[in-house]
Length: 355
Image (cartoon, rainbow, N blue to C red; front, top):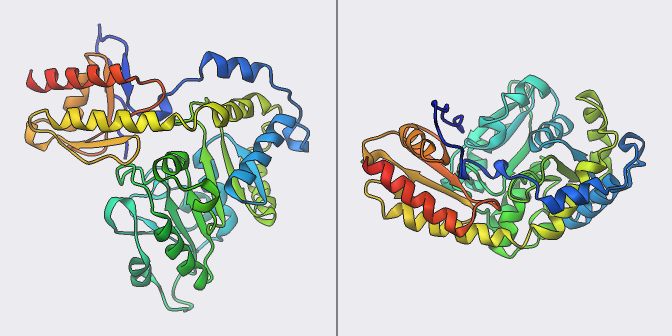
């Protein structure tokens, strides 16, 4: 679970280097200009051309028949769960998955579904783990109706599910008559890091979504993709949970801009993450997990201070990162953090660790 940023003390300087999350990115001036020029209409009636263009493009990108524009990735997850599941159903997912740890118990509160967490290194599980959780068909057992993965795995260190692993898990699920759902919050980070196209990565998954408010730099928006029948059913849940976005084209335009300008540059964030990891590893008492994408996890146990304490000290010097436990920190690179900013962040953390 991500802890809140440290509370500011009087006189605390503004954040100069924000590694707290890639959700901290802000739309560029060029993106905002593109948004203001967007043609808009009524998204509810399908007459907002910019929303329509985004959904058509995303469906093609993910190799699906249809797509739906939503405000956030959490809404994508919850609407997907509501569409796939009925009250009393069971979802199989990793024990660190976002739907289990970070969505306020939404699956239980909204869909009446329970999530069974599975173990596995770096936020991933395999067919053997699924077999171990498989229940015999019985009126005493909850129906197991959905298998979900997270690409990349956030609490798994930003790890990328290999294509072969995704296929084997999805094949197992379908062999057991379970639909599949991919939480694609950082899917484009995975595709840039692995070289696997989004449509190939999502080919065996019945629903998938992409978040535009993380490394892609938009201020609002995520798109849920699936079959025409799935998205048709999902629209009823969108209506129940808040309805249309009306002139949503203003926000959808930011997402279109992100697809055109901010995907390939994710590779820069991955380079910066590796540089940050190397720098942190040279600080006495800090051990670092090798990053695969833009998330750098590190352990502060040997420094003698908790991750929260180190974060508070760094924040007082203008550098922000998040914490995921007593001694586990997370720093996240993104388009608003430069290579020079990485060097400065390492210098600040080294200094406050020694203070």
